[in-house]
Length: 118
Image (cartoon, rainbow, N blue to C red):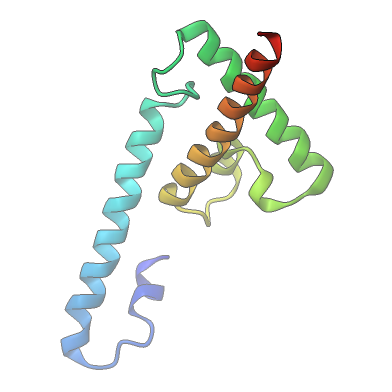
């Protein structure tokens, strides 16, 4: 959402300040989410796994979602790393939620593989 969209439909002067505050709050949430994403850019487990295992899960999760998206073209299957680079309409808060979901799937798959090896 840009500022013009945030102010669309605001007719009364008294409604301008709340609309600007909501817009500003949304931008702050998005900036906070962007900062959080940059801190966990190459991790899948947020410190739960040793670094080598974490990188393997990260790469395999990215590749799995990349292949799923290529095969289906379903927007929600696009790897979050790709979303950041190609879909500017999606805010970082949305990307952060996508990352959490995709990492959870990757970690569940990793756990299932480990359980199968035991």
